[in-house]
Image (cartoon, rainbow, N blue to C red):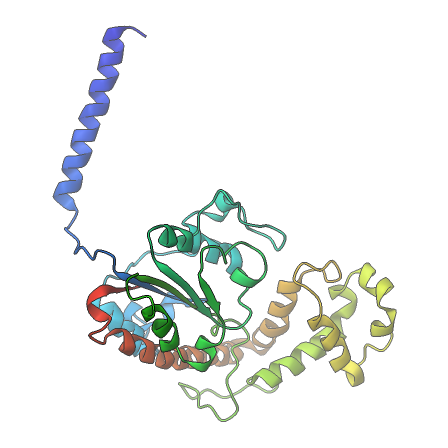
Length: 328
């Protein structure tokens, strides 16, 4: 390429950079600077935007979440990056599409060349904590999501003792903290405890599981009714004692066997779809009334979760944290 041509290309690039920088300076608002602020992420698996009143839902399911939204920034177009939890969650943790970070199946693992959010915070001198429901796949099943956390806890969320994570962080008061709260409470099955009142009065279709015990019983029945299609030939060959007595009378034995299998087992045709279909069939077979009831269960679970989050958000609004903590 001639000298003239090179200078022409550089002139075009320089013109673009000047225009781009000028445009950014004009249209981008000045954001408040919060140097070395604590960062708290509240990560809710299977949270539907269209069930939140601050996104237009007609029921007041999430007063605490929406109160936070009124004080901050709300993204109107925010899309999950994959169709199931692990790839999508890891996209949040590494800021890459699943097609880039590569974790899309049970047997995949995050490359060591990819940095997690926790690792990056740690490099910047932060204390890093993961607080979640028991046995959260992203950090317990070897996918790589656990990298970068100083401490991983599964009891604080369950007992609602969130403040314990903050107390532990305060022991090293010279360092800011990054805490990633994660919950899968809104995951199927939408189970509530016996005696809990639905957020809206909807008639329960006959046989629709409501409590966790109902769901376990429903899953056991589904396994017995469909085990020939759900399990592989290898399962029948290696465990004939299980399947020769696969009857409703012994359904709990088949369920117990199923619960011992790992996620990546080759004894089941599709572990995730099995669990999904065993629950979704109640809505599919029951028509609109069953779908409305399922939605009422979801709304109730969401309302209960919002009440729990209200305690955490209230804690973060105390003078000790509010001026120096970013909540996402």
